[in-house]
Image (cartoon, rainbow, N blue to C red):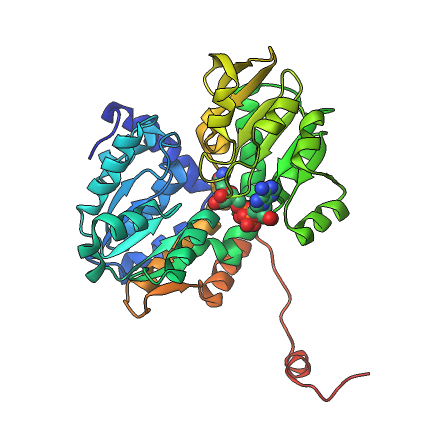
Length: 413
Ligand code: NAI
C-alpha cells in the first residue's frame, strides 16, 4: 500500500460511516452477502475515485468475500483520510492526493500486481494498462466493470478495434447509474465544487454549460435553480433542441464566450473551449471542467496565451493573459466536483455502487464472453426497488387484466 498518512484513519473512518448511513441499498447488499459470500476468494483490482462512498463499496465487496486492492482513478480526487481509513480496516490502497502522473501510473501497476480476476474501472485507464503492458493478466480475468461515460466510450473503441480480450460491463449505461448519478450527482457536486473553489454568487450570473448529455442536463438545471442565466453549447442537434425546449439559450461556444461569467465543460470530448473562445471571454470569467479527463479545456492553448499565473485559493488559479485580461481556472481543469469538493453525495452513489456490486457478483461467475456488455435489467429493477423501499415510497402493481392488456394486440380503438 502507498497512502499519504495512516494517522488520518479515524477521520476517514467517521467520513466513511457518515456516507454509509446514506447508502441503504449497499447496506442491504452487504447484509445479504454476509451469509452467501458470492465473491469468496476472488481478487479484485479497483481503479476508482478514493472517496468515502467508494470506501463503502470496497467494504461491501470485502463482506462478499473479495480480496480488494484500490488505486485512484484521478490524481486529484483522492481523500487521504478515507484512504487511511480503508488501509486501517485491512483494504490495501495505492493513492495519494495530488500524486504526479508517474506515481499515478505506478499505483495502477501495483494494483495489477494483485493478479486480479476482476477489474473495476472508472475511465478505463486500468483496463487499458492490462492490454498495453500486462496482457498476461488477460487469461485469468473473468471481466470487469466500467463506471463512467468516457470509460465506456474507450472500451467500445477497443472492442471495435478487435483488441478487448475480456468481458467489460458498462455500469454507466445502467438506468440506475446515468439517470441519477450523472444527472443529479454531477449537477449538485459540480456546483458544490465551483462554490467551494470561488465562494461566488451564481444568482444573476451567466453560466455556460458545454455539453447537454446526462451530466450537462443536471448541471444546467442546478445552475438555473441557483438563479443563474444558463447558456448551453452542443454539437448534437437533438440534444441542442432538448436544451432549447428546457428553456436554455443555445449558441456556439465562441458567442457564449462573450457572455459567460462561469464556464463548465461536461462533454467527454477534447478542446471544447479553445484559444478563440478564451480570447473572447470577459475579464474575470471562471472556467472549469466536470468531464472525466482534463482535456476538455485546451490548457496548452491557454498556457500559450498566459503571461503570469498565481494560486489565489486552494482550487483557484488566476491566469493573466497577454491581452491583460484575467481568467480564473478551477482545479487545474480536472473534474471540479471531485478535485474541489468531495464528489457526488452518498445518497446517489448508493445507486451506482449497488449496481456495481451486484454486477461484479454476476461477473464473478465467469459466464460472459469478451466484449462490452449491458447491466441486466433485473439488476436495475432490483436496485430501484430497494432504494424506493428505503425511502418509504410505495408504487402500484399491474393487475392481471392490465398485464393481459399490455401483452395483447387485439384491443385497439
Ligand atoms: P453524454 O454522452 O451523455 O453527453 C455528452 C454531451 O456532450 C453529448 O450530448 C455530446 O453531443 C456533447 N458534446 C461532445 N462534444 C461537444 C463539443 N465540442 N461541444 C459541445 N458539446 C459537445 O455524457 P455524460 O454522461 O454527460 O458524461 C460527460 C462527461 O462527464 C464524460 O467524460 C463522463 O465520463 C463524465 N462524468 C463525470 C462525472 C463527474 O463526477 N464529474 C460523473 C459522470 C460522468
